[in-house]
Image (cartoon, rainbow, N blue to C red):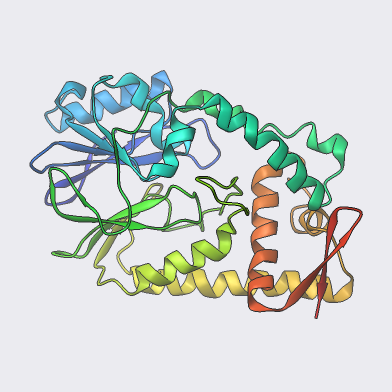
Amino acid sequence: MSVLTTMKDVFKITLPTPFPVGDVNVYVVRGDKLTLIDAGAKTEEAWQTFKYQLGELGYKPSDIEQVVITHHHPDHVGLLDYLNDELPVIGHPKNQPWISQDEVFFQKNEPFYLELFTQFGIDPAFIKNVDMTNELRYSCHRSLTMSVVEGDSLPGMMGWRVIETPGHAQSHIVLYRQEDGLLIAGDTILAKISPNPLLEPPQFGETTRPRPLVQYNASLRKLQKLQMTKVVTGHGDDVNLPHELIQKRLDSQKERAYGVLHMLREQPMTAFEVCTRLFPKVFHKQPVLTMSETVGQLDFLEDLGEINIEVVNKQFIYHTK
């Protein structure tokens, strides 16, 4: 597998993952510091592939001087465990409990998800089969050495700045270089698919759950205002017409949501009932992904003022107005 030169000093390395999404793209950026953007899933196959492709660029893993992570999902952080323990790891502060696999954080999450899934109308017997931590074996046990937020610059990466893009993950950031309009987008913009805005618990004193699809649409609209010429992505191909793609994603999202609105006009439903109609063949195999997508559509419609929520026996029943 060859290494693709993306732009003058940014190089793409494509690594295998054990996930349905397929390969993940990570990036080597030549600057004042040799920087790795994202790190792939923690598998031996990914590690051997990484070393080989890095070698094609004339480097070895010990040459990397820092890692910036776009978000905390295992396919983007796992190989941190293969890299030098002293290597600086930079990312949004909301990465920390996930990449360190903080046991207290996960213990606090259990009642949150139990209450949430009860509100969404999921059968308790089904809830027992939902494993929120299964994929973490492909993640890492590391800590951030530096946190970055909206507008921050990055050490050793002159001209790049951080833009927060919550939605697909609460920890998500992208890196933008105004000089040539290049955006390193992680999973916020993908050429072929729209990323799933995943349900996550609140962090850092937040009292209500995030509404990831509403956030994701706001992130896309923020990026749409940038003077982008090219987007390099976390999965799949580069995007050469990013503004057109973003508008397509926003239009498609609205169309999907109004399909859900049409269902609710027929009869009020719980989120789980909507989910089983949207994903009849896969909801039981991928409950977190399908429920995240479903709740995202309902959050979107609620944000637009199209639906109301009635609480009956601790379950949310969604009604049209």
